[in-house]
Length: 149
Image 1 (cartoon, rainbow, N blue to C red):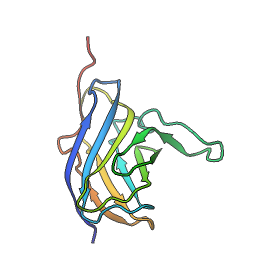
Image 2 (image 1 turned 120 degrees about the horizontal axis):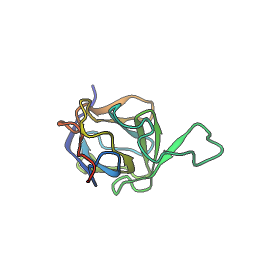
Image 3 (image 1 turned 90 degrees about the vertical axis):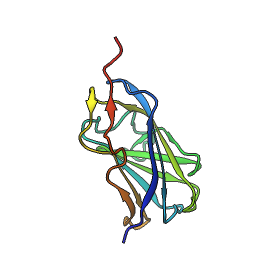
Image 4 (image 1 turned 180 degrees about the horizontal axis):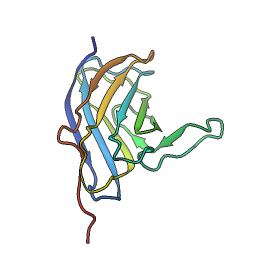
């Protein structure tokens, strides 16, 4: 049985269509986070498949796309992107009583409107099993405003 997530908060630095924005996810998982586990954030298909400024960082990993991200709770963290799914790995454990915060930088906002698909946030253990999942992270969808005039 998978654990639960609580205290889910989603924020974006700007919501104008076609612009880049920093997306921040804050939540708590009742199982805590251990080094070696990952957080997976799946975006609606209205977004770019590589979510934002994803690029190859290492010649030794030609098919792996990285994007800039940060987390106070997970300490040093890195994010890979593959077709709407961002996988975050952290270098610090987080107790079940503490929030996990993740900021994905330079996400390309989709077209104006509200996404019908929801953001999904999953906590995955080192074997690939789901420890917790929230299929409705931003329950109202991601709201994108018209570009400024």
